[in-house]
Amino acid sequence: MRWKRRQIAGILAIILIGIAGIIAPPYIRYLLTQILIFGIFAIAFDLLFGYTGLLSLGHAMFFGIGAYGAALSMIHFHVNIFVAILIGIVIGTLFSVGIGAVCIRMRDVFFLILTFIFSLIIYLVSLDFVWLTGGDDGINFERPELKILTFKLSLYDEYVRYYFVLIIFLISYLIIYKISNSPTGLAFKAIRENEDLAKALGYDVSLLKLKSFVLSGLFASLAGAIYSLSFGYANAELMSLDISLRVIVWTLFGGAGTLIGPVIGTGILTYVFDVISSITRNHPIILGILLIAVMVKFKGGLYNLADHLYNLTLERVSR
Image 1: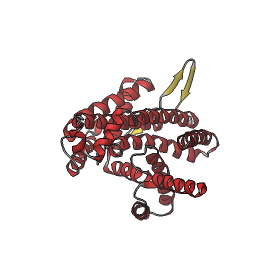
Image 2: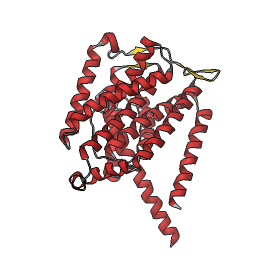
Image 3: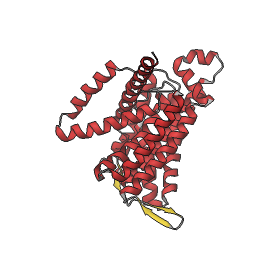
Image 4: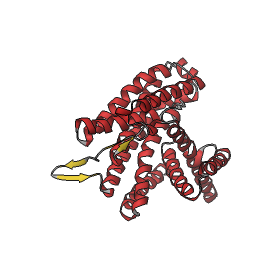
């Protein structure tokens, strides 16, 4: 019964998000598009952190690599949108394999520091290679067209862009959901709970960690590719520490290890950050205080808080 209620809630949420693309004002539609893209990034990060227990402080490097891979393939090779996305994913995944193979040898804070170092190196390189990446200024390009049968749809059209991103978000969420509930996903959770015990039970912990890291990097690269293609630009800031910290905050705020929690956290904090930043220049301080208050009071994140309140309500009703 509880599972059916969650399914119904999920379907209703999809319907509401779909309707929002039609009735929302242009700026809200633009903000929702960003939230959906960052939502893919957040669930990708949650697969690594929330499910496997590996905290990366440099996950924006894959987001940025995916963005640049797609953008540069559009500029220099004039490929179609799906090939550009594929190139961004492939490049990001290759980097995640190489970087992951080194990082998974470390544990706890050493893993965190190593991911930060790799991210910092890639960020600094992207700033230095201005002729290729554009550095802080970034690179701009014409947004591609979606060719479906005889129809041509441009991503300059805000409705096309919104529903294009929404479809990719839903597909990504379903795939990661399937992975998280597969035997591999359960093995990830075993590592998160007790790595030594998982190893004693016969799990190939190193291989599983690498799988989690690569899968997370793959979907983070996908999010980056979709971002650059949707908005027609990519810059070095997409792989900065700021973006890496944001995805950690989104995930913790919404509820790590829940998939939907990080999406909720991304949506709420992106909107709140936008509202506060329009009111005062001290918005990082206000947002920081808000986050500290929520994280201290509700350690499991908003999703776990809502789930707890839901169960509490059912218990009282059943009495």
